[in-house]
Length: 336
Image (cartoon, rainbow, N blue to C red; front, side, top):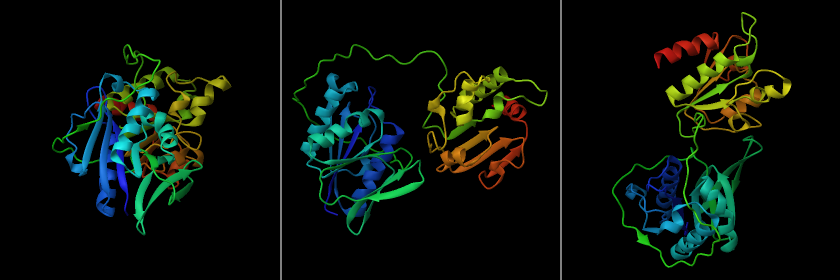
């Protein structure tokens, strides 16, 4: 494989790198060793504070400065194009972050290349690169290979490769004197305030709330407020990520009680997200195919349901607790 690979990353204002970026660096390092390819790491924003020497890159390029610290298309696209031209790479891989996804297609257009987003794996077969991607809600897996078009630019999903271990600091070569044409000025960056953080892609545990939480319980009463308090208490104490079945999100349109903090962004399954957490705990969920398909990449699956014959008991869960989820979560929160 005679490719020149550019691993395109971004660093935040503190210079730290997130998990998805470290995984992308790990994938780039593997491709370099498997195919004896040349590897260049290009960073936009700020020179990373962590040592990434373990990726084994031949060169480290950075476009930094106040104009490039904030995420803007007009500045990011100029920086990415400068990194690509300086590296002279034929293949670009980058993490599927919101910042990267915003400009990666524009980079392909400017470089007269091709782009594939949401890639879940890159490998070498018969001396050439192949990329893996899922279609139709993770039901069809395809392998993509491009022989003619270069540069080939790809964004890689988090959770699909092993992250590199942080090592020694590296020497970064700065690219400067770039011409920027922008009509926007970043005055300040404000973090969201209020409410609880319930979506944590990097958490090791996914907690999924099913429609049973707001149905009538054994005493024939609806306990939506108690359910909301129990779930949020667990999410905050355990630093878990929260998901929901479609029925749970849509119950409000049927005039039924709903949990106030659930949105369609929390939706897991055939019509929602397909997360990659290490562990998953489904509570009051039926466990049928439209919902369970969202658990395809979760390594360990557990469920709590009063019905011993629910879908989770039919081979979809490693462990099924036949119990009242209210009682179970009260005990769990006490232990936490």
